[in-house]
Image (cartoon, rainbow, N blue to C red; front, side, top):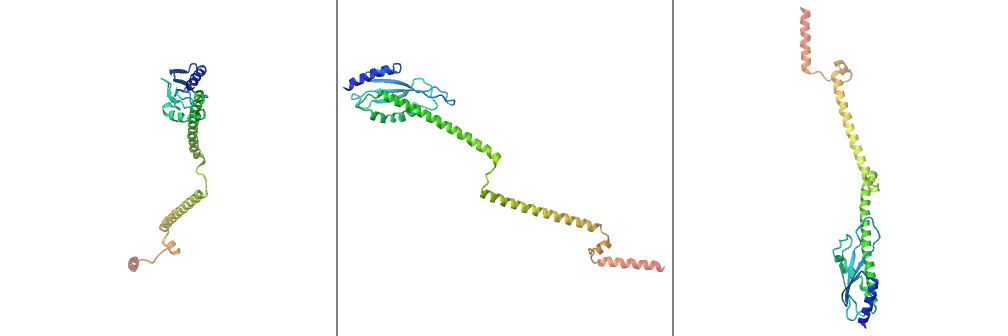
Amino acid sequence: MGREEQVEEREVLDSIFPEEITDISETEYRISVMLDLPPDDEDTDEPPTVILHVKYPDAYPDEAPQLDLSPEQNAASHPLFSVANDKDNLLSGLEETIQENLGMAMVFTLVTTLKEKAEQLILDRRAEKARAHEEVLLAAEREENKKFHGTPVTRETFIKWREGFMKEMEDEAARQEEERLAELKKARGKEEKKLTGKQLWERGLAGKVDEGDDEEGGLAEGVESLKVAT
């Protein structure tokens, strides 16, 4: 019963995949599964091809077929897909389909499921790559906008700015007062040097005459008296 179903399924697969199927033995063959992907400006690589290896156990289809995956020979690597890295993920993704179809010919369904899962894997990675690229652009745009908008004003940033501003104003006022006093003292010193003795006396700036000056003054008067007496 199992062998008859295997032969019948193999004939049907020949009509569906005339160019893609290759026999290895009476119970083993491989099918080339070429993935179809929508065009993408960022992903210009040729869609990859996955080789599905199928081997019938004696009890197939009541027992699951033995499956394996390999890349197409001499195929260029694809940046978003690798059979070596993705094989386990794809094969495990076929388990549910296998269990749902036990007792029936299932290879065509497995090929369809494999193709869909591999294509979706690449599309998801395309989307993730696009999101990452978009995030880089947005981050660059945010940094550029900071040059024009500055730091957003919040209550905390305003209080910090106000404290700094008031401190700066106090320091500037103190500096100006020191400069004013210094200029005033300098001007007063120059003015005192220019005043006559009479002006100093009238303004209350003159102090007591030094004792040495008195003695010199008295001596001078004495000399003048002597001259007059002669």
